[in-house]
Length: 282
Ligand SMILES: [Zn+2]
Ligand SMILES: [Zn+2]
Image 1 (tube, protein in one colour):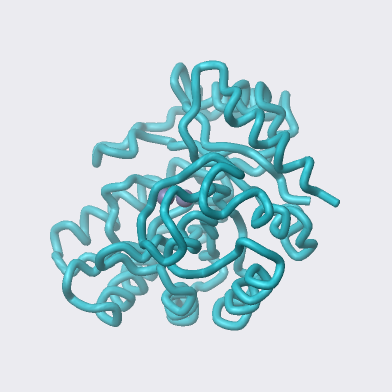
Image 2: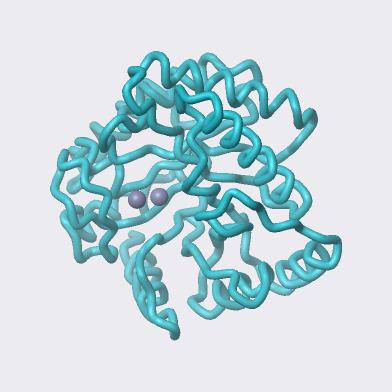
């Protein structure tokens, strides 16, 4: 069984995410360790680590997954932005390593005109630099499948396969599959047949063993529309049937599957989605 959870706010302290995750009876959680729209990262103090570890210890919520800053673009052809991105990613990994967070989800990046090949080369170089600067780190960077909009890399499984096959330390990367993103990128998952076809393609190009986390979002956009607009599970173009296939796929047992949809203060949307997903298990 997948470990269901959601992206949770860290308002009031990083450790507050565990309370919120417990409130919706989830098994896993995703957070931002720092403001995702700012270059200047939050500093993680020993006190913060202690509070975080203690709060996690009171629950069974694991793994914690972090999502990196939206500003980071490891594929950028512009040296200044690329260097800033590498720096930002290093700081993110440092925060996660301190906090004992095993995974950081990262959008591969956008080549902004230099072309797919050049973009992939930049990402590989950036990851090699980051890994070289942080020897022995346990935290793993999960490259996220993207909606394939604009010049983004990661809309095709082949993009991720190319990156993984070229980095010097492939054991330090993995994949986060976002259901909304792959669907609008053109991979159908709405029924058992299309699901088998899509996951077969993933396994062929990337390899299912590289899949370490999932983002569970339904989609407001249609198949192949490249529109990255998340919807509540069962209320979008994918529909609950598509998620039934994921929920009953034994190859995914133990992986975190995290919701990234809007929520009210009482978090009832997440609670209801998690309940719905559990009800799909045969
Ligand atoms: Zn996502
Ligand atoms: Zn998205």
